[in-house]
Picture (cartoon, rainbow, N blue to C red):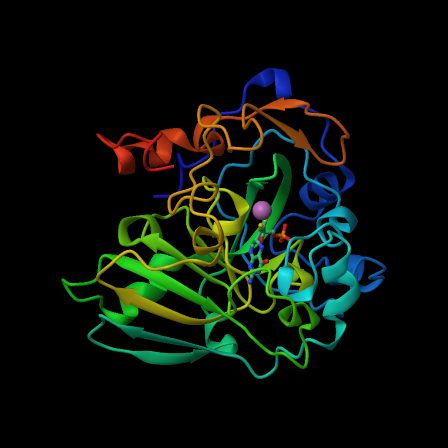
Length: 311
Ligand SMILES: Nc1nc2c(c(=O)[nH]1)N[C@H]1C(S)=C(S)[C@@H](COP(=O)(O)O)O[C@H]1N2
Ligand SMILES: [Mo]
């Protein structure tokens, strides 16, 4: 089923693979990169390798972003608003034990621990992450399609949206003292978006569990949407009838729509979305692609919708 889910990347963007990928190809099979990460100069979380399978999931031709960058240049406002803050301030964030409560319009509400989530078939997905601020990275995430978890709770016929609520631990998250957003950070998807096989419930990256600054222990990654839709450190998932309020949409609905599909044709009111800065570059160096390059897989979800109105 996942065979033809890869993004369309023009061959002009093909760059030599970085060390990570060549090492990976060399090792093959189940990865054992724990040792690689154990030298963790790249973040506060001790590295802990995950076991996952090499799936047929196609990799984009883009070079994978250096893990040191992906774990030190973050948006996670609960730990501060500058890009370096999360890696600096997330060291005290305690993610053990951790459970997600799933409820709302479901036949079988449940509470599930991270240990249980780790027992799903984990796979690696190399996805572009495109921030609404017009920068992007390419990250090897590890997780499983959210739909597998949602199927277990049996959404009722009233369930049309999914709301994600994330952690709010004032003693461990210094950013919560600043009312830059309504806390806890919340996000939402339409049910069919949440059930799309590209939507990944994510437990790791670069072969290891998620570092705190990247949303430990569990986040989602929705690769065709701006990065803020990918809520970090999730504690609750509710199936709901109506479009839920979300943190960024509540803060400035004219700037951050509910859908927030990556769309070069719809500018942010304060800047263009036509191009993006693939980090570590300093200048816009890539054209932004509709749906972040995943249009073939997801455009049909929006058939007939005016995406300038539902931005
Ligand atoms: N709880 C929470 N989740 C969040 C955010 C946040 O501030 N708080 N920032 C979002 C934004 S704007 C982006 S671009 C991505 C960044 O993920 P990364 O740091 O793993 O690259 O996380 C998203 N998820
Ligand atoms: Mo973002």
